[in-house]
Image (cartoon, rainbow, N blue to C red; front, side):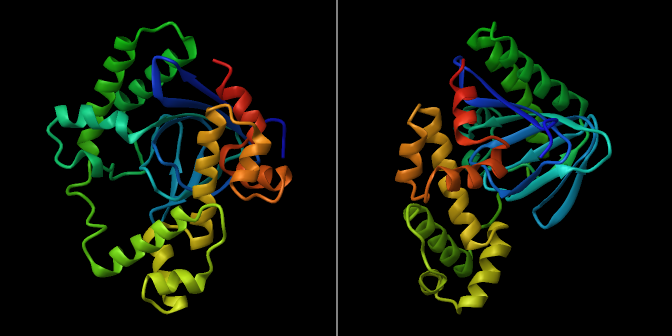
Length: 276
């Protein structure tokens, strides 16, 4: 992997539930993963190619990229020019009070319908909020003002109705399988066990689970462990201790799983995120 691939994570003490990523990529490719936060980004140069929600997407300079919490996706530079972009990771709890102000029904299920679109106002507010985090000189009210304006604009891109993900018996059974994986993050759960939880044949379950989540059960299980690892890294838990607690074989194994999601080793990520 080229040294031209750079990933820099920043956060502000005044905005605890928001993290900024500044990324430059030439030959790096993200593995399939999903975040617990809303991911709101702007492509600055180059082109980012990724697969999400059953479709291939291309984000060109000036375009906005959005991943809802749980949206499985990958990502790579899709042009000869180096890819540069900024991405904000905003926890859903940060969204909810603003969404209530805008009279959004079921704010806990709010989702944005488009993965890539062009909107100068949203682009501008993402970059304004990123700049405030970079400068580290703003008050909490300044952050809240920009975030308020950003979410007000994003509401226009809300899916027409809350996604009816939990209404069918099939989806409720798949949710049970997801919960089983989440509860057993520190140990492998066999496909046979999961298919029994979901009351499906093994291979029907495998296909249904991937259609539902965008990931195989194994990818979903690994993704959950990586998200837990990131939370522990932010709390300054020693890297070796995290690897042991989450059931990774050793630090090398932990590194190999973490880096395709964040572009950095766990130790590099922790050093950056705790710097400020």
